Length: 500
Image (spheres, rainbow, N blue to C red):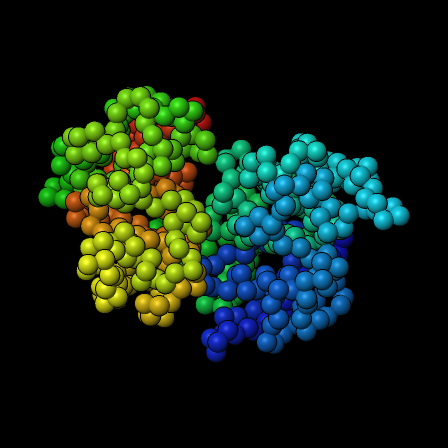
């Protein structure tokens, strides 16, 4: 039920370094309602919600919480007023129990001693209110990602949160965990909580939200009831141009079709506890997608090509010869490139520059007598910065951490183009990437295939498979459960096969 609570932003402006990132932005979060907040990376979403949560101060405008108006909030004020934010990067204490995390920063005490029974009872009540079954005595480090996220939500709700901001909450969740999250969101809404739901996944908007607001270039370009909004409306608002519904690209011309001989092949391959009986072939000039949900084995198959996991029965072959790299160094030497799902912790060197991140696998070639030539790094940066349309200050020394997610991914893609790889393995290549950058990345992957690269994509995004793959293998529980090719690759076929 709506208890009348409203969190409002009115005329919010914010600049960083002379660049205006929010331009007179309004937002309304109402009790008992879910507002989906959309926009490409760099549109201003993160800045706006951090202002609401008290992490940034606006340059102009006001924030209204209920009937109280504020020029700005600080984190303590925001929390006291019931505004809480659940970040994409979890902020729990893994070594503590679930109950201890739910009361983190406010453990109950009696005469200076922790009241453990009160602390545990509080946790049980919070978890019950959220409708999740998690052992309050379990260490948080033992939980799955979705369960840890639920613990953070329970922590906020036990602290009397009235407005909950969820930042890309499904980015790292399995299908089953997403369903549980949606159930929790529905329960919170029915209890009168105001929710702001940030996502890049457009299909989630209709599933979870009542209203939608889209930011582009720091301004509100669409605000509407979800029931009156189409997917095409959202895409057009986000990227400023129309885009056809999810559809396959045109079939390649005869001269562009892949060669008959596979460059990469798995033959009855398996890895203990991860996958088994996998048969896949990827030819030069071809994009093959492995589709499945978390735990299906798709990521593990991809990792074995790059030496992150060993094939312990069957065989993986590269250009007809056995391929069993003992680590990434050996895989790179065999001209295999790899983009992991978590680019920030596993792919990019976040404290290094864009030029260094592009060049790292090519350093041996760029060095002379063991000394790296800085000019070679700059030349590589200039070449791929322009070709891939990387949006940055166009400075080789700019830290990669300062780029948006889509542009970071383009830098990591450029890394393997500079290296001249014959095989490119991509795991969730557009996770957390906005619509516009996603289309650009797809175009570049297709171009690489046309130029003769063999591309293997492991993804849980069925739209990605539809838009990219020449052929697809669907996996569940570590096995291939179906194969699709050409126009038979549809969202309906993919989801049905992945379910069984």
